[in-house]
Image 1 (cartoon, rainbow over the protein chains, first blue to last red):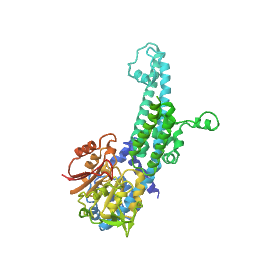
Image 2 (spheres, one colour):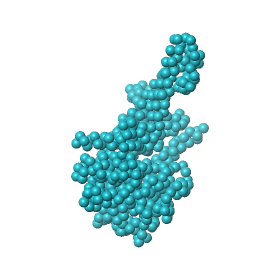
Image 3 (cartoon, rainbow over the protein chains, first blue to last red):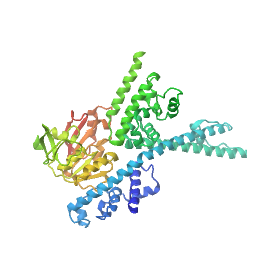
Image 4 (cartoon, each protein chain N blue to C red):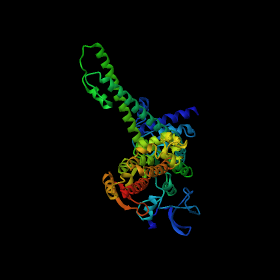
Length: 322
Length: 209
């Protein structure tokens, strides 16, 4: 049993590494992936018939450059006596493998993306904070800079020569700090790209309607795709505006019209008096998208057309008044 | 029309109407009669190809590689009349349903893999007589090209091109032409739009060159 669990774990990581092009991978994963490439042995070469613990690794972990007459080869190599027992074995193996993969993937895909989006926010926030420090510090030098672009600019300059020992020592630290800023900013960009690449697989419809980053943000706020799929659209509409919502519920202030979905162009690009309607329409479609993503998983391009049409109708109301 | 149907696929009267049917355990709540299951041609593009009388070349009992099996609506019917049927689907959630379909069909083999990376399943899939392709990704021609290695010399590719998966904004005809242009190593035998059963879908029947 212990062995089975270990197997699952390794092959799952390999699967991820391939799909995310090694985004989550480590050198060890790379090695494991490449070690199995180009093998032209059938899946059954590492299988002991009757021992289900060997099935999952055989199917999920293996690969081959090209197909071959695997049924005949398995009989020749003595793995199975005849064709019907080959297919019986293959059926047991594919069922066990796909079941294990489904279980494992469903459990962790959205959680990985939640870490990605939170790490992206963290790196952006820290990069900005440190960039402010670099700006303030650089104003004591001959070449003041500002912001993250300023930190980049500072790195591209050749260091000024000075006889002042203190200035030389502190300038060196300033440059080093600017390097950290740039490196954090690059990491934030890489995290964003990873989210953009992965979201269409994890939540195709949500990603299509909301955009990958906003979609991931909604999943993070809800705590997972399943949790998001179970939220009513009114909750999705105000996710991220909890402070305002609870202030309203406590009798202070008006009810929030939108949470993080404000960043969607359909909300922010709609004139203020109609934003509540636009936010409600968008949240309704996002709720449907999250449910399809969680319970069905296929892509439904018609959702986008329906949303576009609904928003166009709402926005045209404003045009009419003017 | 029905002389072009593979053996195991036929028409029967179910609930008062003439329906395309296969024989097997029911899957998605379709009407049945004496073990025959109605094949909903509005939910299945391959079903629509039969309904349209396209010459699929299928006779029954073939070895099939099905790309984009989703929850198994169509592939369940294929497994009813075909031989060993390999069903590739990349999304985890529909595979959960597909596994239940396969549990009752010993000739249906589920692979949770990406149809764009055939080397990940070439160690399992044997050379096949037919590839059925119904994938919802961009660059569907690339998927067909990459999987041609599985097809025997006189085999058939039965592909359905979804215009909206390639490019929602482009004119479907443009998308279809681009698909046919990019198809490599195949000669196209027949194409037909599947409207009104399936809007903006083109069925393509091809064989290796």
